[in-house]
Length: 247
Image (cartoon, rainbow, N blue to C red):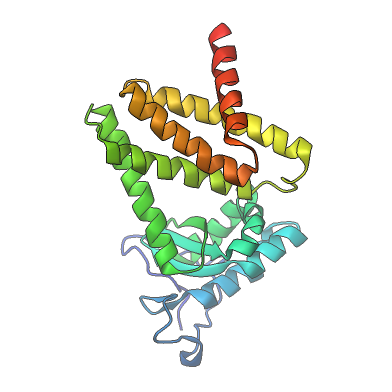
């Protein structure tokens, strides 16, 4: 039996002080065709053990407990332990994003693996969902680099647009009571400010027509899940820009 349940860095010994128990998952508990079984590591078993130990370090929270129960382990990708939520359960995700909870989970995983493990939460429960997110990030990063070196092309704008829309959609989904007018109004103002800043940063040096076209599409898409007319969001973006210029 072993104290280590995640693949170790060969140069870093595992800590045994607070290691996940020495009882390794039985053969019956480790499916051979399960995508969450990576390098002979049963991620479902690992996640169950993490859930048992979170509240040894933290004060019990029903919200965190519910989120831990609904989160589904997807993959150990390098040094990233990825869990996901079905779309209907994704509003629970912020409970795992707080620094205290996230740090506690990462410390449990680190002591099991003997190396630093990054804990990541996504919307989706399949390996393909994670691969899609990584691809989107890679495209957005490439687009940023291309624009920084003045190699701007139309498809780069599309990649950046997808990244912005995806990030805002995730941000909106994490807001509780967002259907309430006061909460939604504050959210709209915050997002309008972020979009105005993004437009100035990303598109100010690009062709004006192309930049405006991309921003119009971003506003159209984001306004749908804010449940406001696109012109309302566009007005708030312009209002923020003008007020910023005055200061």
